[in-house]
Length: 416
Image 1: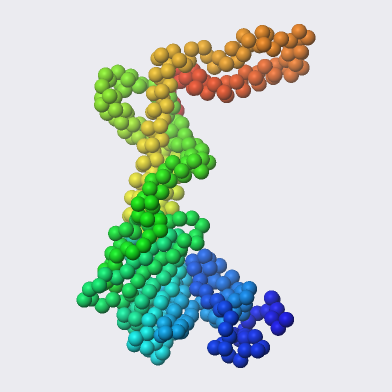
Image 2: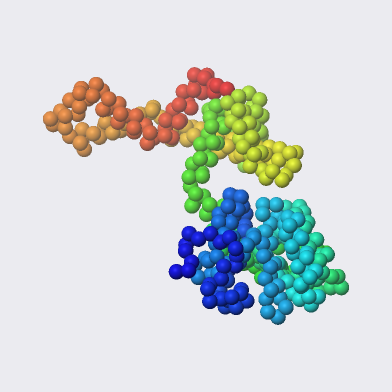
């Protein structure tokens, strides 16, 4: 074995003994550009296993840096650029590629540029401008010799081709091939992309198609909840924490007394607005929860957005959650109130289920030896008490209705 697994390559290319120069090696070769995940550890893992190793399985790796240029047959070139985490190449890469273009790339040669991130799509979508050095390299140095830009990162497939015109065409084709990702990104959000470098483009292919992408995105509203039901549990707990200090709402006659549906609907949303203002002004527990949620919402807005926009997005986001929580609370309160008025709930007390159990216990579970009575004595009354309160846990609507009725009748209002 002339090559050891733990070997560190310090003078690449380290060719097999029977090969004198790289041009003579006819085996498979591997060239790699780093992506955003490779930069999360400062490129340490990438350098250790790509730039400081000569072999990856049976693939020979002559690459010394995180960027490369390959000369292919028929006057074709491949430029592999390292955009790091800044969506652009540094001055050292720019110097390397600009000098290569000047000294070796012919006027009629064709160049393929590979990058990790498709900034032509993302810049259009986020309405920003990145990759100024890459743009300068393509427009002022390659001068219409770039036939294809290819990238990954976004987990879908999209191909755009230029629309023939009298304007100069700096890049003929744009290709995103990120289908190897762990999940699928939508394509329909990019369907209005039309121009870059002053050249017009049209979509030639997309996977998923714009129609399928839109349908999948809409389906996620229900599919996300089916696959991630834990998220709804957490969200329900957060909503309850936001509004629990406002339970119960005893004055619901103004909603129920309207005869028309439109009148009830208008009164309902008017009540929601009154509760929203009350929450922010008087319910200090709920207001504190809203402030905490607002802070979290602002933090999760991308840092590239200005502070004013981050604050506005955070306020709108939290307000939507507060309104949703209030609507759900009011719907539940209305449901319980209607059941109480029709004598479907709050008819017997907290332990209705336990009382029914006691009424049928002797008939269906006879105890001729008096074991239940002895167990009650041995446990100091804990045995029947545990059964009673456990059964109350299975009769939550009745407990809620009885508690609500007692609080409203006795004039005990929710504490803020």
